[in-house]
Amino acid sequence: MSIEERILELEAEIKKLQIEINKIKDELKLRKKVELVFPYSIYANILKGLAHPIRVLLLKLISDNGRYFAELLELTRLSSATLNFHINALKVAGLVRQDVERGKYEITDLGRQFLDILMNLNVKLGEFETKELDLYCFKCGEARMFADISPFYIRLWCPNCGGKHGSTWCLFLLNPFGEDWRHKNIDVLIKESIMYSYKQTGDSLKESRCINCGVKIKYKHYEDRIVGECKVCGFKISLDIHDISLDRLAEYWIRYRKIKEKVEGRVKRKGKECWKVSLLDSKGEVKLTQYIEVKTGKIIDEEIFE
Image (cartoon, rainbow, N blue to C red; front, side, top):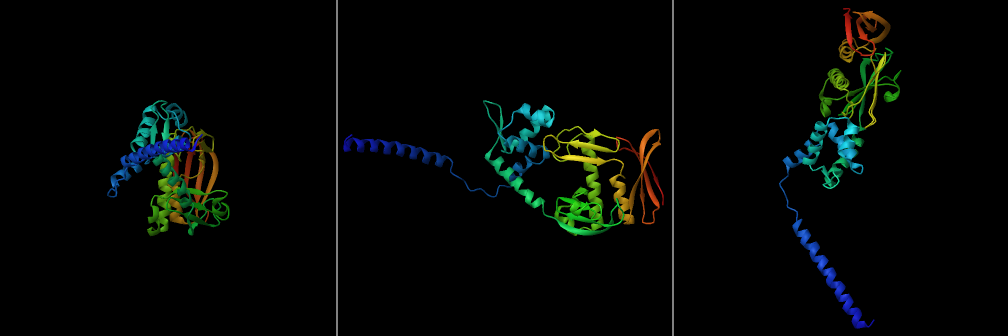
């Protein structure tokens, strides 16, 4: 090939490249960014799309190579209407989209960015302050309890029988005050957190939902405990139901400071098979006795000794 022919080929290639460059320039002009006043309503709408644990879960599930509606139905065990409601909220927020041809739901770039933000929050969730309480362990009755407090949760543990930071057992609570916990009286903080967590847990058990992500799960009822495992998010729970109910525990714990729980065994009460469990003060005197139905955890009766 002569030099002239090579030059002609190069000129042809240059013309093609120039055409492609012009196309890209035209596309960039169409995509020209416009500076907006800080878009409060837009951001609020995006966050609204995530304002439910089910939606956060769906975003995570869809991020893994996309999901079909039937797959999400099987995983979450939600009704079609409920699942559709939550997916639409994510779509309106611009976090997921649906492939028109396949019908598969996929995460958007915006959704991926928000998911990354949520994943990075785990670092923040791991931060807490530890405080020694003027409350003795209600299990052993011998050591003061400690509280690991974050704006999101409170972990109560006993250094004597609960292990460091609750490695053996702990009372894990939701913190309803956020960062404002620092301005609360510690007794109020502990009592309100117990009461709030007690209600949240009770609602989840009543509705057969995972306490963590909110999907439908089946709880197994044994004589002395209720056990559940979420196949979607992996959360596991095992609740002793022969313990004093948390609302009563909070009330008497704050009042007497040093109490001890004692399970006295199974008895008949009002025609029901029950666990008899009492709270004792520092002198060993019984202050409260509850009769808790075997398997269900329902309070059948209680006696108060003042």
